[in-house]
Amino acid sequence: MRLLALETCLAACSAAVTRPANGNDGADIIALRELRERGHAEAIMPMIVKAMEQADCRFEDLERIAVTVGPGSFSGVRVGVAAARGLSLATGAPLVGLTTLAVMARRARRETGIAADQPIAIVHDARRGQVYFGRFDGRGAALDEIALLTPELAAARMGEGEVAAGSGAHLLAAARPDSGIGAQLPDLLPDAEDLAQMALNAPLAEATVSPLYLRPPDAKPQTGKSVPRLK
Amino acid sequence: MMDQPSGKSLTVLGIETSCDETAAAVVVRGPDGHGEILSNLVHSQLEAHAVYGGVVPEIAARAHVDVLDRLVVGALEQAGIGIDELDGIAATAGPGLIGGLMVGLTTGKAIAAARSLPLIAVNHLEGHALTPGLTDALLPPYLLLLVSGGHTQLLIVRDVDRYERLGTTLDDALGESFDKTAKLLDLAYPGGPEVERQAASGDASRFDLPRPMLGREGANFSFSGLKTAVRRAAFSAAPLRPQDVADLCAAFQAAVLDIIADRTANAIALYRDRLGPDAPAHLVVAGGVASNAGLRAALQDLCVEKNFSLTVPDASLCTDNAAMIAWAGAERLSRGLVDGLDVAARARWPLDADAPPVIGAGVKA
Image (cartoon, rainbow over all chains, first blue to last red; front, top):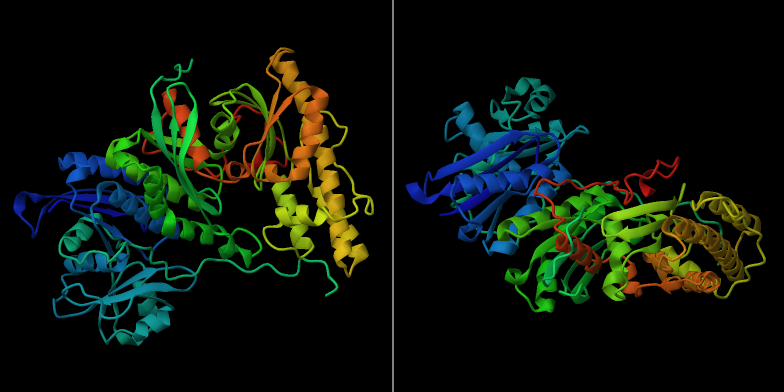
């Protein structure tokens, strides 16, 4: 299958294109990536074009477009989703949306070497005293809904001695020091190559992909600015 | 020097997401340089922001990404064309709210990349500035008064991509001062049209309001002192009866019109100074506040006095829209002005990059 995957939600930017040479599973993949705190909107499209060229893939050949839908930086999430939806509109290729945490779980499982029958928690520091939290089984399926939690509440969702990976994992270990939570991979980020592998067999988005923010916008109704009026 | 405009017909998709309207449009620029709008869709987010009494950037950005791709499909359908028939993709790249700009520009880049079409990153203000070419076949040079919620400027439009700023607001934009007055008086959001409606039944002479900058040299504006004076007058009359509100609105609008006429008269003199006495005598008014009937009437009087023609595009093309973005894109494309896929959205992007900085103007310059 010809699939394009893109990821712009966190402190990196990556694009991957599958090549059909090796069949479906374990497809041959061209992947480009760079660490990047900002400027995803400028970097991602040239990176996609370059990956497509290196994979010798034309946009009209694409059969799927995969994107991480969040959680992550609001702007980063939107850049990825807007790019994916624009590409889908222009190519007709259907969309697959996966969460950043699910994509990180695939990598974390590989890098920690954790046993396949053990769950792994992915914990990303969401700042303001909260973490993005999700637990995944050996097949990558989410064990419960991905959530925005305090480290204390997140830690309470984990079993004794379970492994937590990601930039917020140490916050859980600190919140529940007696639980034996093992914090690993503080630099863990999602990557389009994992996303591409997962998206080859993932279900297509029903209508489209939409951002997963988990946090409401910062906005307060304005009050107390009017002059008193007779009713 | 710029390339001469190309003589072939250009069909361009326009995308606009700089504030609280999501918009998509298809425009054709004919071989003779005339424009035709094939579709012009606007999805207003007004209700999403009304409870906050103003545009909330994060809410706006979220709404843009939710609806933009469907709006683009709708614009193509209404135009009756396929993506294959497009010659370019134009998207607003600034100035405006950065989160929304990134959604529109990224969508435009994606469509351009997937179809190997040229991308044109359009300055929203250039969209307003060139609209009379689309609506009235009016070609530069002309004098432009740009009055919106975010900007209040007088510019010489010398050509596509060539602008000379004569004046700008030093504090509030005109549309902003209308909205703030409305908020002060507890009028419905958005306040501009409501202030104008109230002013129609008010007595402008009842409250004596200042006219900042009136009689001063140059073509800059300042509205914050007027805002403070309206506040003071309102509190002195509180609690306000409906007639008080109408009178305050009338006094505010009368002050605004005096200021605009005075500043524009100076700009006309500057325009003649710089372009010579034989320069085409055209004044164009664009931006959301251009739909104010009192403003149009005041400028009509001024133009008669100064022997200028007055052009005000239809209200639907003065408020934020994507047809003007597609048109500016087509004008740029016809001159070979295109952008790379790495072009960045810009919250601040003055039309006249060479104009000296004006203290206080900030992003409104």
